[in-house]
Each structure stands twice: as structure tokens, then as C-alpha cells.
Figure 1 (tube, helix red, strand yellow):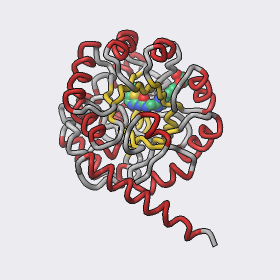
Figure 2 (cartoon, protein in one colour; figure 1 turned 60 degrees about the horizontal axis):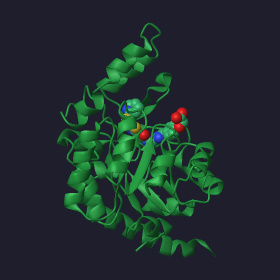
Figure 3 (cartoon, helix red, strand yellow; figure 1 turned 90 degrees about the vertical axis):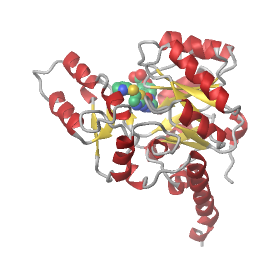
Figure 4 (tube, helix red, strand yellow; figure 1 turned 45 degrees about the vertical axis):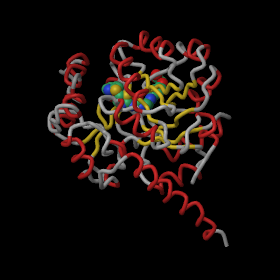
Length: 315
Ligand code: TUI
């Protein structure tokens, strides 16, 4: 099986992270991924410290293997969440949607391994200066909040810019993507969309069905005007949002209000028409529900076969 330096660094069996997806990445999903040998990650998203604490404790009841917490830096509760991961002795923290440097000295002091999502080489270099153990280079093919660059361009540039391990994310859902990521210099991958349809993922079945039936061109990026572009399914919600975004008579506050609660509506209530169904451009490759263990084994076996056979191209 494929192993890399990230496995030793984090004490995990396989170099696969599960993305810390808001309203998706709860104790059920995170513990299943960790128990299968990958890195399961709880999304702190907009949780309060009590909600996060409960989720962390649930994971610890379900697995004794390492897990992480993803801190969404735009959360209104980010300061208390940043303290909670220290109090709960969380071993690994990933961050997204902003710069984590303000919190990094305290996390390092507490012995937490920090792995920020970085959308550029400049931000990668900065977080490494502050002591990041690794970085996640996430391309704009990903679902949810995204940066400008593609995975194909971002990953090798970040690999050249920093000396810590790089995890590739965005547009990876099978062994081909994993093999390609390793060829670009990555030491591991983070998957979001593929884990949306994991058996242990507790989101509404309507959401899973949208992932399973998505075609290559079924996503759209909204929110550029607000400074936080988000990739989601083309549906009534995102089409309305998109048209209002280009309507000068709609204020930023009104636009923010339209987006509020939309992801929860899709993921928990199952309203995949008026809710925001975040998913990546690779969704069309995701064709069946399966357990986290089977997903990880299938993807890594395929990657291993491809990487072993790559010699055929060298004459
Ligand atoms: O964070 C994500 N994906 C997310 S967060 C999220 S919740 C949300 N919902 C609506 C609007 C905004 C957020 C849904 N999906 N992925 C990691 C990620 N981080 N992608 C891009 C970044 C990022 C962007 C800028 C990281 C650092 C960064 O720093 C520059 C800056 O300006 O802060």
C-alpha cells in the first residue's frame, strides 16, 4: 500500500485526509475515516465550543486512532474554538477560509500539529514560518469555499515553495487523482466529495443523490463579489444567488442573508433545490455509496497499480 512521510508524521496508516466539510464532517464520518486508517476530520464550522467538545468526545468513543478538527476561520466562534482544541488535546488541526497565524503559537505550544489549507505559495510560506507541520494545497476544483488556482498548478508550486509535506486537494476522487497528486509532489491527498456518499456520512439522502447524479458541468461558483467564492451545485438556490450577485440594486448584506443557513438546508433538511449543495467538479466520477474503509482501499489500490505501471511510459 502507498505510504508517505505524512503517515509517520501523523501516525496514520494511509495518506488520505477527509475534508472538514461543514454540516457533513461530524463524529460519524470522521471516526469511520480514522478507524479505516485515514485521517478523519471533524468540521468545527460555526459550532460553539460545547457542540465541538461533544463531537470530539464522540469521536474518541468510536476510535482511538488520530483525528483532526478543521477550524473555519470565518466562524463567529473562532476564538473559543481555537481554545477548545487545546483544552481537548486535539492532536491535529486543519484550517480553512483564512489565515490561522494568530492562533498558531498557542496551538504549537500545546503540541498540536497544524495543517492549514493554503490557496497560494505566499500563504504556504507564511504558515510554514509560523510552524505548520504540513499544508493542504487545495485547488479551485474543490467544493465549498475555494481559491483561484487549480490543483494542477497549485500543488507543484507549493511543493517547491515549502519543505514540509504537501497534501493535494480539489478534484481528487479516485486512484488516478491520487497517483497524479503524488506525481505533482504531494505526500497525501484530501478528499471531500467522495466522502459525501460514504455510508457513515449522515447527510440527507437527497444530497447524496445529487452527488451521485451530478455531471461534469453541474457546479457553479458564486460569492466572488463577497470575497469568498463558493462552488456548489447549479440549482434554484445558486442560480438566484448568482443573478442577485450581478444585480447592483442588491446590497452585500442582502446577498449574505440569502446564503445564510443554505448549506444546512441542503445537508440536514434535504432541500436540494433551495439549499446550497456544495460539491466539487469531480462529483461525476462518484458513482456509488460505500463504506469509508472500502473507499480508501479502492482508491489506494488503484493508485498503487497506476504508479507501479508508470514505468511503461519510459522507453
Ligand atoms: O474552507 C474551505 N472550504 C469551505 S469553508 C465553507 S463555510 C463557508 N460558507 C460560505 C462562505 C464562506 C465559507 C465551505 N467550504 N476550504 C479551505 C480553503 N481555504 N479554501 C480556500 C481557503 C483559503 C482562502 C484564503 C485559505 C486561506 C486564505 O487566506 C487568504 C485570506 O484572504 O484570508
